[in-house]
View 1 (cartoon, one colour):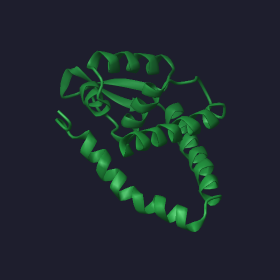
View 2 (cartoon, helix red, strand yellow):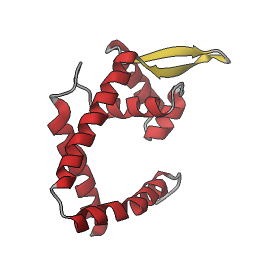
View 3 (cartoon, helix red, strand yellow):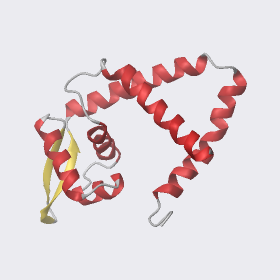
Length: 147
């Protein structure tokens, strides 16, 4: 029961925030997987396609397709790895950096506004739950969990 409620709540939060902010985003509209790939590249500039696929728990060819789509949208650039000419390294374009910074700022403003409407005990409960949620995320992200 808690697992279903937790997932419904987390997914609901993501969906509501995404819907509320989509119209404010500059540039082309992106799908969730494209946004997630940009996030991974922002956190790990120069990451390879295979490593990004592993991080996103997606097939390599799926990530390659996403890479090509984001290159076409001028949000990602691919460079040949100087140590292995067969491999590519991924980097955000300046437009993607600007877009992600704007998204994070708008998201922060939206969520902080909603948190301000809650009472102190509710905000404290959410804050106190964050370490356990991060541990749950780490647990779920480990290979072989639930197998």
